[in-house]
Length: 425
RNA sequence: GGAGAGGUGGCAGAGUGGCCGAAUGCACCGGUCUUGAAAACCGGCGUACCGCAAGGUACCGGGGGUUCGAAUCCCCCCCUCUCCGCCA
Image 1 (cartoon, protein in one colour):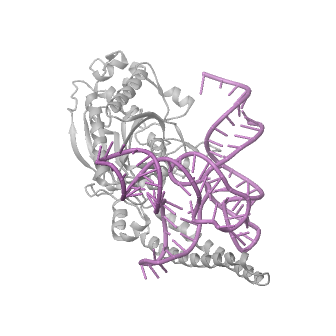
Image 2 (image 1 turned 45 degrees about the vertical axis):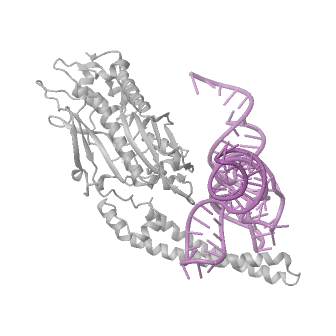
Image 3 (image 1 turned 180 degrees about the vertical axis):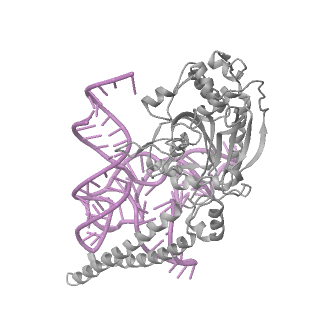
């Protein structure tokens, strides 16, 4: 959520930003409604002021002066209630527009309506050249009995799967690898709940009970399954006031992630690229409320993501996400796309991580503030999030990049201390 | 699942219809004292909204209600804690 005052002070910028992000929202209506709202508030405050004065007179008033005062008070109450009702209607309309306005955008973020406008910043690694026809991860998994899609479908439906045998150890190794790296980077480690209250999801920017939601909700409750530990990590400090000197907070969280993938059917449904459940290690940052602070943290998250994939030896490219593809909360977003030899015709890059700077957009909704010594009041902190390892997609990259002519798969060196084996097959 | 207790400012914790936006303590900020620090003492210190300002209004878990007037009374909901049961 943007500050309403900011929106009204920067109408043209906000409108342009909405256009760039492909969000159709009537900013002028918002400004007009706010004017109406302010007028009403002024009126109501004045009436309440009168009412208070009358009420204060009553205990001191003589017996025969009282009935008239009481009657005046009653009349004022009724008038206030009327105006109050109108005010609430207007505020509801304001909220409806307000919540649809996305975050502002980093000046360097590429402007464009979709993915195709995103900019590749750099590449790392060498795309493997195979002197045989490379298999995709589904074939490789079948060959080594690593993933049971049929059992997943029988038990939980399409999009669920069982990891088996070496894949189990690979998942655990990837988690350990990411966790160890983040501990070395001085992140506070967490294993978070896999469910969260809907208000937390909304604060982060998800819409749990919407029609086209990405979120599984628990019936007869206000809980939903989390789509990422971003939700539980960010939500953990809801309504808290932090000391700016203890910022930035560097947090990491391990959780399962559940996604309905509504509307994604028929799109890359093969294998474990797009699934309803996976395991992920996530980074989250709370920084001081300045673009310098959050920008610096953003680049640090990106650096860590790159180092994780460099450590695995998986080629990737870094994408600066176009405005139309940022989603509402992000001010800027970098994605890592790993090379996946089995993807598309002859291999393709596939998204494996993302790193977002959400500035104060989430903090305003979650009411996470900080206090600065010598400064009056509080400010909303900046929040950031980034993927350390999303296991399912990292697994694809490992299986496909490190497959050998004989069908075996070489395990990245950095994982071997946890897998206990250096090759599958 | 059963029984009970409770939700008040950054924290702790008073407050059962008007004198309460709210005592007190801690924390924090400024000052006196001190070589410096601590202690002690003095003063200040919630958030948000409306207003050019003076100032005003709202906020005691959330929502409704009673009343001229509600932190305080009534109703509904949410949450937290304790004990018991069940359970990895």
